[in-house]
Image 1: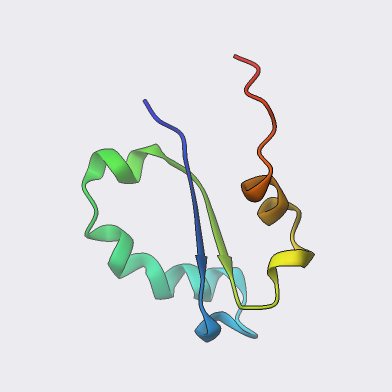
Image 2: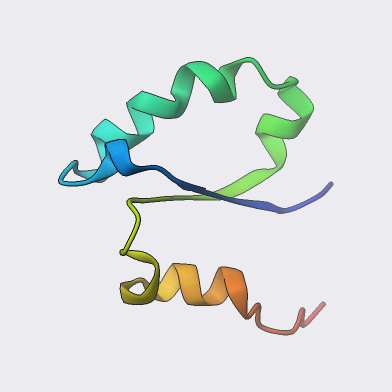
Length: 68
């Protein structure tokens, strides 16, 4: 099993709450194989300019060491 963190940055997300952003990408993600969908553990959906303001985005760019 893989643990996938997915980050999507799109200007269409500006001003939208997370649930609306998630609905916007659902059709695309639904086309991925089920095995890949099952491995997705985190979905980061940002508008341009939000990257520096998000703790999860920082973790995406600078992942913590795996403790396993």
